[in-house]
Image (cartoon, rainbow, N blue to C red; front, side, top):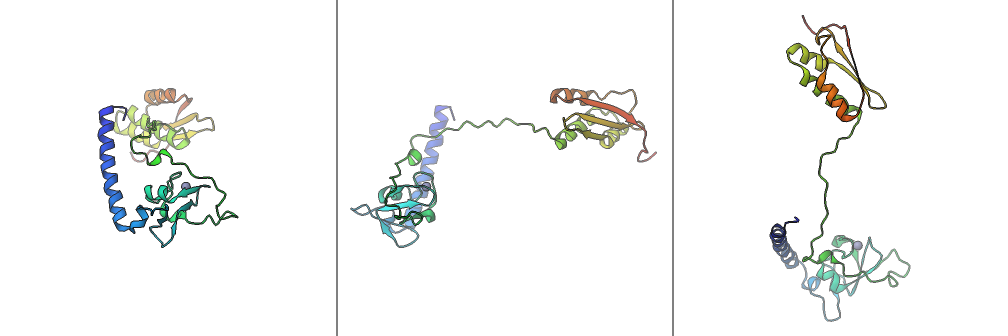
Length: 206
Ligand SMILES: [Zn+2]
């Protein structure tokens, strides 16, 4: 979106779509909902109420009839939907008379896009489940035959409270003298200690 041509294209597509949606919506509403009268009175599109002052359920402020009509009955401050726009602020003692006006914010200003830079790089959450999964897949990577793959699948992998790992592999499936190189590498990348031991156990079949 920092590419000016791409941005212009995207904005024009978005703006075209927006005016289509706006005109479709206004065609289904009373005319007074999108065109306030000379005194600035606008009609709520969902129920028959006319007023020149409106209130958003979520914001403490007054909205003029012109403002709310222009913004298709969405709050100019927080974007709340038409059902949350009311003609009295019943939650105020004076029904909202003393509330300050809500400014014409840039939310409905279509010429100035808002940018949010989103960091979408994958992040690794180190918890027991993820560590076990990564260790087992590293062991599978170290396996060169069926017996070792079974050994990788059946190895007991324990993670302690410091996220350090203790792996017990079955000596009948995994050679005693074979180091789990990939598992050691992965542990080093994750900054965790790895403890390796082989133990005797009953293998699934002979
Ligand atoms: Zn609001």
